[in-house]
Amino acid sequence: MKRNVLITGGAGFIGSHVVRRFVERYPDYTIYNLDALTYAGNLRNLEDIESARNYQFIKADIRDGEAMLNIMQENKIDSVIHLAAESHVDRSISNPMAFVETNVIGTVNLLNAAKTVWREQMEGKRFYHVSTDEVYGSLDDGGFFLETTPYDPQSPYSASKASSDHFVRAYRNTYGLPVVISNCSNNYGPNQFPEKLIPLVINNILNNKALPVYGKGENIRDWLFVVDHARAIDDVFHKGADGETYNIGGFNEWKNIDIVHLVCAIMDKKLGRPEGTSQKLITYVTDRAGHDLRYAIDANKIMKELGWEPSLQFEEGIDQTIDWYLANKEWMDEVTSGAYQEYYREHYQ
Ligand code: NAD
Ligand code: TYD
Image 1 (cartoon, rainbow, N blue to C red):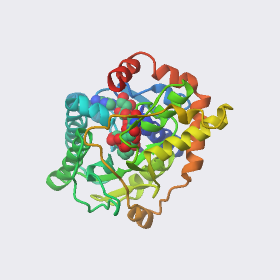
Image 2: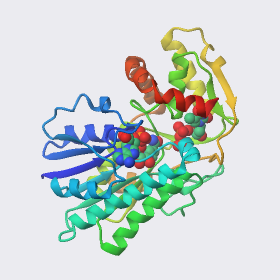
Image 3: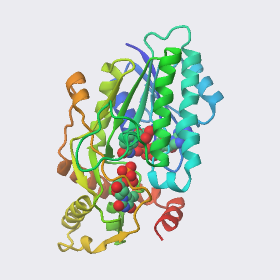
Image 4: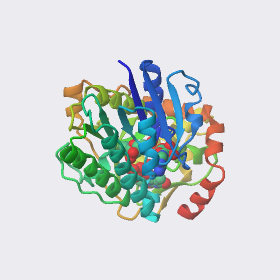
Protein backbone atom coordinates (compact mmCIF):
# COMPACT_ATOMS: atom_id res chain seq x y z
CA MET A 1 0.00 0.00 0.00
CA LYS A 2 1.29 3.46 -0.88
CA ARG A 3 1.36 6.16 1.78
CA ASN A 4 2.78 9.66 2.11
CA VAL A 5 4.03 9.78 5.68
CA LEU A 6 5.13 13.01 7.32
CA ILE A 7 7.49 12.35 10.24
CA THR A 8 8.22 15.49 12.27
CA GLY A 9 11.42 15.76 14.31
CA GLY A 10 13.06 13.08 12.20
CA ALA A 11 16.54 14.58 12.55
CA GLY A 12 16.42 14.19 16.33
CA PHE A 13 17.25 11.23 18.52
CA ILE A 14 14.13 9.07 18.40
CA GLY A 15 12.86 10.53 15.12
CA SER A 16 15.99 9.46 13.24
CA HIS A 17 15.50 5.84 14.33
CA VAL A 18 11.84 6.00 13.30
CA VAL A 19 12.66 7.55 9.90
CA ARG A 20 15.33 4.89 9.21
CA ARG A 21 12.97 2.08 10.15
CA PHE A 22 10.16 3.37 7.93
CA VAL A 23 12.41 4.17 4.96
CA GLU A 24 13.98 0.71 5.08
CA ARG A 25 10.91 -1.38 5.87
CA TYR A 26 8.28 0.34 3.75
CA PRO A 27 9.63 0.99 0.24
CA ASP A 28 6.10 1.80 -0.99
CA TYR A 29 5.78 4.67 1.46
CA THR A 30 7.27 8.08 0.76
CA ILE A 31 8.76 9.35 3.99
CA TYR A 32 8.91 13.12 4.44
CA ASN A 33 11.13 14.10 7.35
CA LEU A 34 10.12 17.56 8.54
CA ASP A 35 12.56 19.15 10.96
CA ALA A 36 13.62 22.69 11.88
CA LEU A 37 17.14 21.47 12.73
CA THR A 38 17.31 23.10 16.15
CA TYR A 39 20.33 22.38 18.36
CA ALA A 40 18.89 18.87 18.81
CA GLY A 41 18.39 18.09 15.12
CA ASN A 42 21.24 16.64 13.11
CA LEU A 43 21.06 15.32 9.55
CA ARG A 44 24.20 13.28 10.19
CA ASN A 45 21.90 10.95 12.11
CA LEU A 46 20.41 9.92 8.76
CA GLU A 47 23.41 9.91 6.42
CA ASP A 48 22.99 6.20 5.70
CA ILE A 49 19.49 6.61 4.24
CA GLU A 50 19.51 10.18 2.90
CA SER A 51 19.74 9.11 -0.73
CA ALA A 52 16.99 6.48 -0.48
CA ARG A 53 14.42 6.79 -3.26
CA ASN A 54 11.50 7.00 -0.83
CA TYR A 55 13.01 9.63 1.50
CA GLN A 56 12.76 13.39 1.42
CA PHE A 57 13.92 15.99 3.94
CA ILE A 58 11.95 19.21 4.46
CA LYS A 59 13.45 21.94 6.60
CA ALA A 60 10.49 23.65 8.27
CA ASP A 61 9.30 24.83 11.64
CA ILE A 62 6.10 23.45 13.14
CA ARG A 63 5.50 26.84 14.76
CA ASP A 64 4.67 28.10 11.25
CA GLY A 65 1.03 27.06 10.71
CA GLU A 66 0.84 28.20 7.08
CA ALA A 67 3.95 26.23 6.18
CA MET A 68 2.46 23.09 7.79
CA LEU A 69 -0.70 23.44 5.71
CA ASN A 70 1.24 23.99 2.47
CA ILE A 71 3.57 21.06 3.10
CA MET A 72 0.70 18.70 3.86
CA GLN A 73 -1.24 19.87 0.82
CA GLU A 74 1.63 19.86 -1.66
CA ASN A 75 2.87 16.41 -0.68
CA LYS A 76 -0.60 14.86 -0.28
CA ILE A 77 0.29 13.72 3.21
CA ASP A 78 -2.08 11.01 4.47
CA SER A 79 -0.27 10.11 7.72
CA VAL A 80 1.59 12.11 10.33
CA ILE A 81 3.94 10.73 12.96
CA HIS A 82 4.62 13.72 15.16
CA LEU A 83 7.82 13.70 17.21
CA ALA A 84 9.17 17.25 16.80
CA ALA A 85 9.43 18.85 20.21
CA GLU A 86 11.55 20.65 22.69
CA SER A 87 12.45 17.62 24.76
CA HIS A 88 14.74 18.50 27.67
CA VAL A 89 13.25 19.10 31.14
CA ASP A 90 16.15 21.32 32.30
CA ARG A 91 15.75 23.63 29.31
CA SER A 92 12.00 23.83 30.02
CA ILE A 93 12.80 25.08 33.51
CA SER A 94 14.93 27.94 32.19
CA ASN A 95 12.80 28.73 29.11
CA PRO A 96 9.22 27.41 29.38
CA MET A 97 7.84 29.58 26.57
CA ALA A 98 9.89 27.75 23.92
CA PHE A 99 8.07 24.58 25.05
CA VAL A 100 4.65 26.22 24.74
CA GLU A 101 5.51 27.47 21.26
CA THR A 102 6.86 24.24 19.80
CA ASN A 103 5.12 21.55 21.81
CA VAL A 104 1.68 23.12 22.17
CA ILE A 105 1.27 25.62 19.33
CA GLY A 106 3.38 23.53 16.93
CA THR A 107 1.19 20.49 17.59
CA VAL A 108 -2.03 22.50 17.13
CA ASN A 109 -0.64 23.86 13.84
CA LEU A 110 -0.16 20.30 12.61
CA LEU A 111 -3.62 19.26 13.83
CA ASN A 112 -5.16 22.23 12.00
CA ALA A 113 -3.28 21.38 8.82
CA ALA A 114 -4.41 17.73 9.00
CA LYS A 115 -8.00 18.74 9.73
CA THR A 116 -8.05 21.04 6.70
CA VAL A 117 -6.30 18.75 4.24
CA TRP A 118 -8.24 15.64 5.29
CA ARG A 119 -11.63 17.33 5.75
CA GLU A 120 -13.37 15.54 2.89
CA GLN A 121 -12.01 12.11 3.62
CA MET A 122 -10.81 11.18 7.10
CA GLU A 123 -10.90 7.46 6.38
CA GLY A 124 -7.50 5.89 5.84
CA LYS A 125 -5.74 8.86 7.45
CA ARG A 126 -3.76 8.75 10.68
CA PHE A 127 -2.38 11.44 13.00
CA TYR A 128 0.02 9.74 15.42
CA HIS A 129 1.24 11.86 18.32
CA VAL A 130 4.36 10.60 20.09
CA SER A 131 4.32 11.57 23.75
CA THR A 132 5.97 10.84 27.06
CA ASP A 133 5.19 9.09 30.34
CA GLU A 134 6.09 12.34 32.11
CA VAL A 135 2.51 13.61 31.52
CA TYR A 136 1.38 11.27 34.31
CA GLY A 137 3.53 13.03 36.91
CA SER A 138 5.68 11.36 39.54
CA LEU A 139 5.27 8.01 41.30
CA ASP A 140 6.31 7.03 44.81
CA ASP A 141 7.83 3.64 45.35
CA GLY A 142 4.78 1.62 44.25
CA GLY A 143 2.55 1.42 41.21
CA PHE A 144 2.85 2.01 37.50
CA PHE A 145 1.52 4.46 34.94
CA LEU A 146 -1.46 2.99 33.08
CA GLU A 147 -3.16 4.51 30.04
CA THR A 148 -5.97 5.48 32.45
CA THR A 149 -3.72 7.21 34.99
CA PRO A 150 -4.88 10.84 35.37
CA TYR A 151 -2.53 13.45 33.93
CA ASP A 152 -0.50 15.29 36.55
CA PRO A 153 2.45 16.95 34.78
CA GLN A 154 5.04 18.52 37.07
CA SER A 155 7.57 20.27 34.81
CA PRO A 156 7.05 22.86 32.07
CA TYR A 157 8.17 20.15 29.60
CA SER A 158 5.63 17.60 30.79
CA ALA A 159 2.92 20.28 31.06
CA SER A 160 3.52 21.21 27.41
CA LYS A 161 3.41 17.56 26.30
CA ALA A 162 0.25 16.96 28.39
CA SER A 163 -1.35 19.98 26.77
CA SER A 164 -0.48 18.72 23.29
CA ASP A 165 -1.92 15.28 24.14
CA HIS A 166 -5.16 16.96 25.23
CA PHE A 167 -5.36 18.92 21.97
CA VAL A 168 -4.85 15.74 19.95
CA ARG A 169 -7.74 14.02 21.77
CA ALA A 170 -9.89 17.15 21.51
CA TYR A 171 -9.42 17.18 17.71
CA ARG A 172 -10.67 13.63 17.52
CA ASN A 173 -13.66 14.35 19.73
CA THR A 174 -14.55 17.64 18.04
CA TYR A 175 -13.57 17.18 14.41
CA GLY A 176 -13.34 13.41 14.06
CA LEU A 177 -9.61 13.47 13.30
CA PRO A 178 -8.26 9.89 13.30
CA VAL A 179 -5.62 10.08 16.02
CA VAL A 180 -3.55 7.70 18.08
CA ILE A 181 -1.15 8.53 20.95
CA SER A 182 1.67 6.69 22.67
CA ASN A 183 3.39 7.65 25.90
CA CYS A 184 6.87 6.22 26.31
CA SER A 185 9.37 6.04 29.15
CA ASN A 186 12.99 7.31 28.99
CA ASN A 187 14.86 6.28 25.85
CA TYR A 188 18.57 5.64 25.49
CA GLY A 189 20.76 4.60 22.56
CA PRO A 190 22.83 5.93 19.66
CA ASN A 191 22.36 9.55 18.51
CA GLN A 192 20.96 10.91 21.78
CA PHE A 193 22.01 14.51 22.38
CA PRO A 194 24.42 14.73 25.34
CA GLU A 195 22.19 16.99 27.41
CA LYS A 196 20.38 13.83 28.58
CA LEU A 197 21.82 11.74 31.41
CA ILE A 198 23.35 8.72 29.65
CA PRO A 199 25.17 10.40 26.72
CA LEU A 200 26.21 13.25 29.00
CA VAL A 201 27.88 10.80 31.38
CA ILE A 202 29.54 8.94 28.48
CA ASN A 203 30.89 12.18 27.02
CA ASN A 204 32.13 13.48 30.37
CA ILE A 205 33.92 10.20 31.14
CA LEU A 206 35.64 10.43 27.75
CA ASN A 207 36.76 13.95 28.62
CA ASN A 208 37.59 13.29 32.30
CA LYS A 209 34.96 15.77 33.38
CA ALA A 210 32.79 15.69 36.53
CA LEU A 211 29.66 13.51 36.28
CA PRO A 212 26.86 15.71 37.65
CA VAL A 213 24.30 13.66 39.62
CA TYR A 214 21.27 15.67 40.72
CA GLY A 215 20.33 15.46 44.40
CA LYS A 216 21.15 12.06 45.87
CA GLY A 217 20.90 10.21 42.58
CA GLU A 218 17.94 8.25 43.90
CA ASN A 219 15.38 9.27 41.30
CA ILE A 220 14.15 6.36 39.23
CA ARG A 221 13.56 6.17 35.50
CA ASP A 222 12.28 3.29 33.35
CA TRP A 223 14.70 2.94 30.41
CA LEU A 224 13.96 1.64 26.91
CA PHE A 225 16.38 1.14 24.01
CA VAL A 226 15.50 3.63 21.27
CA VAL A 227 15.22 0.98 18.55
CA ASP A 228 12.61 -0.81 20.67
CA HIS A 229 10.67 2.46 20.85
CA ALA A 230 10.90 2.80 17.06
CA ARG A 231 9.54 -0.78 16.75
CA ALA A 232 6.68 0.13 19.08
CA ILE A 233 5.92 3.26 17.03
CA ASP A 234 5.78 1.06 13.91
CA ASP A 235 3.29 -1.25 15.66
CA VAL A 236 1.11 1.56 16.98
CA PHE A 237 1.12 3.30 13.58
CA HIS A 238 0.07 0.16 11.73
CA LYS A 239 -2.02 -1.75 14.28
CA GLY A 240 -3.11 0.75 16.93
CA ALA A 241 -6.83 1.46 17.14
CA ASP A 242 -8.15 4.94 16.35
CA GLY A 243 -8.48 7.15 19.41
CA GLU A 244 -6.46 4.79 21.60
CA THR A 245 -3.45 5.46 23.80
CA TYR A 246 -0.60 3.00 24.26
CA ASN A 247 1.99 3.18 27.03
CA ILE A 248 5.45 2.00 25.99
CA GLY A 249 8.16 0.99 28.44
CA GLY A 250 10.76 -1.63 29.16
CA PHE A 251 9.80 -2.73 32.70
CA ASN A 252 13.35 -1.59 33.43
CA GLU A 253 13.63 0.73 36.41
CA TRP A 254 16.97 2.12 37.49
CA LYS A 255 18.09 4.66 40.08
CA ASN A 256 20.15 7.35 38.37
CA ILE A 257 23.20 6.67 40.53
CA ASP A 258 23.14 2.95 39.65
CA ILE A 259 23.11 3.81 35.93
CA VAL A 260 26.03 6.19 36.40
CA HIS A 261 27.97 3.44 38.22
CA LEU A 262 27.17 0.94 35.48
CA VAL A 263 28.30 3.30 32.70
CA CYS A 264 31.49 4.10 34.68
CA ALA A 265 32.34 0.40 35.08
CA ILE A 266 31.72 -0.45 31.40
CA MET A 267 33.65 2.60 30.18
CA ASP A 268 36.67 1.85 32.39
CA LYS A 269 36.80 -1.65 30.90
CA LYS A 270 36.39 -0.50 27.31
CA LEU A 271 38.90 2.33 27.69
CA GLY A 272 41.42 0.10 29.49
CA ARG A 273 41.42 2.37 32.54
CA PRO A 274 41.90 0.96 36.07
CA GLU A 275 38.64 -0.07 37.77
CA GLY A 276 37.13 2.86 39.70
CA THR A 277 38.72 5.61 37.57
CA SER A 278 35.45 7.00 36.19
CA GLN A 279 33.57 6.57 39.45
CA LYS A 280 35.87 9.18 41.01
CA LEU A 281 34.35 11.74 38.63
CA ILE A 282 30.87 11.42 40.19
CA THR A 283 29.83 14.76 41.69
CA TYR A 284 26.55 15.35 43.49
CA VAL A 285 25.08 18.67 42.40
CA THR A 286 22.04 20.78 43.30
CA ASP A 287 18.85 18.91 42.54
CA ARG A 288 16.63 19.79 39.57
CA ALA A 289 13.71 22.01 40.63
CA GLY A 290 10.56 19.91 41.09
CA HIS A 291 12.50 16.75 40.21
CA ASP A 292 10.05 13.86 39.59
CA LEU A 293 10.96 10.95 41.86
CA ARG A 294 9.97 7.94 39.80
CA TYR A 295 8.53 7.00 36.41
CA ALA A 296 7.40 3.45 35.68
CA ILE A 297 5.27 2.30 32.77
CA ASP A 298 2.84 -0.58 32.69
CA ALA A 299 3.28 -1.68 29.06
CA ASN A 300 0.84 -4.59 29.20
CA LYS A 301 -1.70 -3.04 26.82
CA ILE A 302 0.69 -2.68 23.87
CA MET A 303 2.19 -6.08 24.63
CA LYS A 304 -1.17 -7.87 24.72
CA GLU A 305 -3.04 -5.93 22.04
CA LEU A 306 -0.30 -5.23 19.50
CA GLY A 307 2.16 -8.03 20.30
CA TRP A 308 5.06 -5.63 20.94
CA GLU A 309 7.76 -6.39 23.47
CA PRO A 310 11.19 -4.96 24.23
CA SER A 311 13.95 -6.92 22.51
CA LEU A 312 17.05 -5.91 24.44
CA GLN A 313 18.13 -6.32 28.04
CA PHE A 314 19.39 -3.05 29.51
CA GLU A 315 22.97 -4.24 30.07
CA GLU A 316 23.16 -5.29 26.42
CA GLY A 317 21.60 -2.02 25.21
CA ILE A 318 23.94 0.12 27.31
CA ASP A 319 26.91 -1.84 26.02
CA GLN A 320 25.82 -1.26 22.40
CA THR A 321 25.15 2.40 23.14
CA ILE A 322 28.59 2.97 24.63
CA ASP A 323 30.18 1.17 21.67
CA TRP A 324 28.31 3.50 19.32
CA TYR A 325 29.54 6.64 21.11
CA LEU A 326 33.10 5.29 21.16
CA ALA A 327 32.94 4.60 17.43
CA ASN A 328 31.37 7.99 16.68
CA LYS A 329 33.53 10.46 18.59
CA GLU A 330 33.31 12.86 15.65
CA TRP A 331 29.52 12.98 16.03
CA MET A 332 29.92 13.79 19.71
CA ASP A 333 32.63 16.41 19.08
CA GLU A 334 30.47 18.10 16.48
CA VAL A 335 27.34 18.33 18.63
CA THR A 336 29.24 19.44 21.72
CA SER A 337 31.08 22.29 20.03
CA GLY A 338 29.66 25.81 19.97
CA ALA A 339 26.28 26.37 21.60
CA TYR A 340 26.53 23.22 23.75
CA GLN A 341 29.50 24.66 25.63
CA GLU A 342 27.50 27.73 26.51
CA TYR A 343 24.50 25.65 27.61
CA TYR A 344 26.75 23.46 29.72
CA ARG A 345 28.45 26.42 31.43
CA GLU A 346 25.16 28.14 32.17
CA HIS A 347 23.45 25.02 33.44
CA TYR A 348 26.18 23.31 35.43
CA GLN A 349 28.40 26.12 36.70
P1 NAD B 1 15.19 15.46 20.38
O1 NAD B 1 15.28 16.72 21.18
O2 NAD B 1 16.38 14.59 20.23
O3 NAD B 1 14.70 15.82 18.90
C1 NAD B 1 13.68 16.74 18.64
C2 NAD B 1 13.69 17.05 17.16
O4 NAD B 1 12.63 17.98 16.90
C3 NAD B 1 14.98 17.70 16.66
O5 NAD B 1 15.40 17.12 15.46
C4 NAD B 1 14.60 19.16 16.46
O6 NAD B 1 15.36 19.81 15.45
C5 NAD B 1 13.13 19.03 16.09
N1 NAD B 1 12.39 20.26 16.42
C6 NAD B 1 12.38 20.94 17.60
N2 NAD B 1 11.61 22.02 17.49
C7 NAD B 1 11.09 22.02 16.24
C8 NAD B 1 10.20 22.88 15.55
N3 NAD B 1 9.71 23.98 16.11
N4 NAD B 1 9.86 22.57 14.27
C9 NAD B 1 10.37 21.45 13.66
N5 NAD B 1 11.23 20.62 14.27
C10 NAD B 1 11.58 20.89 15.55
O7 NAD B 1 13.96 14.68 21.00
P2 NAD B 1 13.74 13.10 21.19
O8 NAD B 1 14.34 12.69 22.47
O9 NAD B 1 14.08 12.40 19.95
O10 NAD B 1 12.16 13.07 21.39
C11 NAD B 1 11.29 12.99 20.26
C12 NAD B 1 9.85 12.96 20.74
O11 NAD B 1 9.64 11.84 21.59
C13 NAD B 1 9.44 14.20 21.53
O12 NAD B 1 8.13 14.52 21.18
C14 NAD B 1 9.51 13.73 22.99
O13 NAD B 1 8.59 14.44 23.78
C15 NAD B 1 9.12 12.27 22.84
N6 NAD B 1 9.68 11.37 23.87
C16 NAD B 1 11.01 11.38 24.16
C17 NAD B 1 11.51 10.50 25.11
C18 NAD B 1 12.98 10.44 25.43
O14 NAD B 1 13.38 9.71 26.35
N7 NAD B 1 13.85 11.13 24.72
C19 NAD B 1 10.65 9.61 25.76
C20 NAD B 1 9.28 9.63 25.44
C21 NAD B 1 8.81 10.51 24.49
P1 TYD C 1 17.14 13.16 31.60
O1 TYD C 1 18.03 12.31 30.77
O2 TYD C 1 17.25 14.64 31.50
O3 TYD C 1 15.65 12.67 31.33
P2 TYD C 1 14.27 13.05 32.12
O4 TYD C 1 14.49 14.22 32.97
O5 TYD C 1 13.36 13.35 30.99
O6 TYD C 1 13.90 11.82 32.89
O7 TYD C 1 17.40 12.78 33.12
C1 TYD C 1 17.28 11.43 33.58
C2 TYD C 1 17.48 11.46 35.09
O8 TYD C 1 18.84 11.84 35.37
C3 TYD C 1 16.62 12.50 35.78
O9 TYD C 1 16.19 11.97 37.04
C4 TYD C 1 17.56 13.67 36.00
C5 TYD C 1 18.91 13.01 36.16
N1 TYD C 1 20.06 13.81 35.68
C6 TYD C 1 21.18 13.97 36.50
O10 TYD C 1 21.23 13.47 37.65
N2 TYD C 1 22.23 14.70 36.02
C7 TYD C 1 22.23 15.27 34.79
O11 TYD C 1 23.21 15.97 34.42
C8 TYD C 1 21.07 15.08 33.95
C9 TYD C 1 21.01 15.68 32.58
C10 TYD C 1 20.02 14.32 34.43
